[in-house]
Length: 188
Figure 1 (cartoon, rainbow, N blue to C red):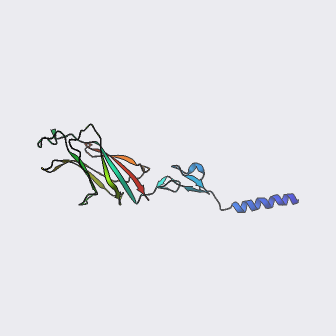
Figure 2 (figure 1 turned 45 degrees about the vertical axis):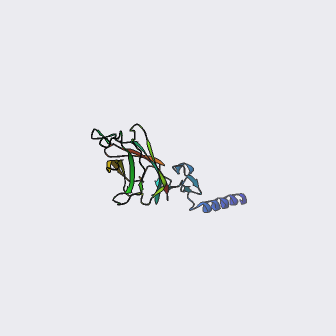
């Protein structure tokens, strides 16, 4: 009887001690590389809950742009045809939609070849303080001293939910005339 009483008491104590300590996770249900620690998912930076929900970044930092496609002609005519050039002298600007000032205006590449990629390295990283708002990249042909011509532009939202925070992604203009790779990091 004493042995029976001890077993019943031990079982009761274990049941009471475990009551209310329901595990919220197991190692297998913490996603995106998260781990289960003491019944809760510890998520990689940028994720929450079961590690499937993305946190919206408070800012992004862009380190460079790489132009992988741009038009070599303007309505069938070489961009620099009137100024005697062989190909466009390209540069880009980056700004928040509707802003009167640029967050970036790059130096230009003279006589840019459409078969090559052109990297626009920022002199200092660009902080995008509103990554969920629309921004614009304009590509120009510099025809100094005659001015400049807009070759094309692309409007985009730097942070897009569900993409799992890529450090490099491609944006393409609506006309599909320009394609630009964006290199970035995120801050929460």
